[in-house]
Image (cartoon, rainbow, N blue to C red):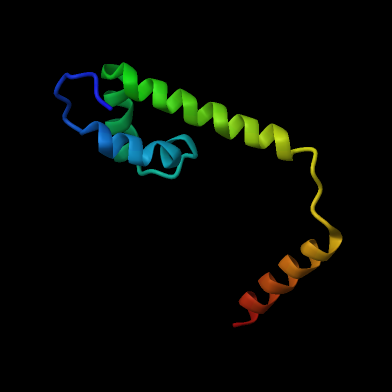
Length: 85
């Protein structure tokens, strides 16, 4: 994917980081680099929008689903055992 214009950061690098970018899991420098790229590259903006849409669908689909109490208990037990190490 590319708009055909040269960019300081290749589209492949931006697309590989889109999910982390959306989730706020990139450094401030990475965030700035990706933001600049997105301001210049419509195909990458489309990719970002698609990722955001999918994440939104997943959140909506699972926000009404409750995890079973047994899963909650197992997760709590796991965290307790990690804390004890």
